Length: 373
Image (tube, rainbow, N blue to C red; front, side):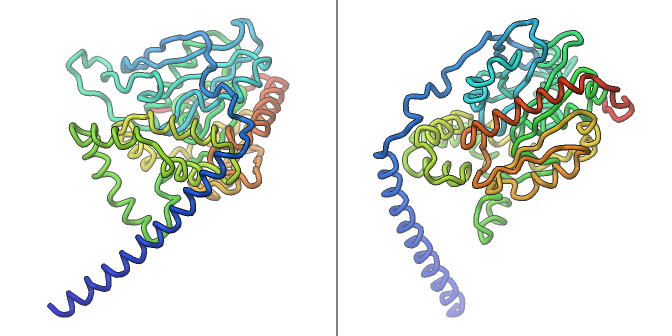
């Protein structure tokens, strides 16, 4: 008993010291945030998230309603389809949407459960009483296939751009529809993404990372149901300095990043329902599309990675090495969301890849035998 009291006493003291230290750090960060908000913000007047295109509802294979928007003429020489990441929506491409208007026909869409898209449909043939299909990266690949067919019918060429989970979605499409790559799909841009499982808790300090991983799934499943979910949503809606600090730390490397941009991203994440966060967390842990990389490599491909990405680390560089002929673009002092942190560099890279893909033109399709039913 005495030994147990000693252990718990030491643990209590340690916990108190850690909590006190964390409180000091948080207080210092809050002061820094206050000072940052007082400085002139060049992005304060930017209409972040306000750009809209021609809306289109695309029905996924299971009936889920996917929201897409189209910018540009139907007869453009190329269509570029943008796929956003986990807990985000199509507005994450604000700067690219603003600055690439002359590139061709641009398609932005919300992944299922995100933004304006429906969360689930029903299994094929199941009818109204059927159970929703579990979320997987493979299912997102099917969604992208539906979006591609609806927004770019016929033989006109397409370039696919994906960030994080959106890049995984492109890999899933390559795994299930390799015949598209080299015929319909003539190029890809993969940003801050990986071919294998990724853990959203990877940014946490090593001592707490394992515990967070073990607790995340049951906790997320629990809070996603009933009254706990409503409580969590109310807490999330409060935002505040802590949300600002955590978003800036996880997503960006530049501590002088525009407060308006951080707030924009934080609000986007907070707007994603906790049930969707839970479902897609499990999908990310099960992701493995390494077999699709050879198919992706049949067309010009660029891999864009921030050298200070706390979520994927060096895995983005590994992805570039795994795609035959892929060009790695390593952005210095950049985190996980370079579209917002280094928008000009990302926009330039997309434009260059589209130009390269158009010069190369359609080639030979990948063999169909690698597809799954």
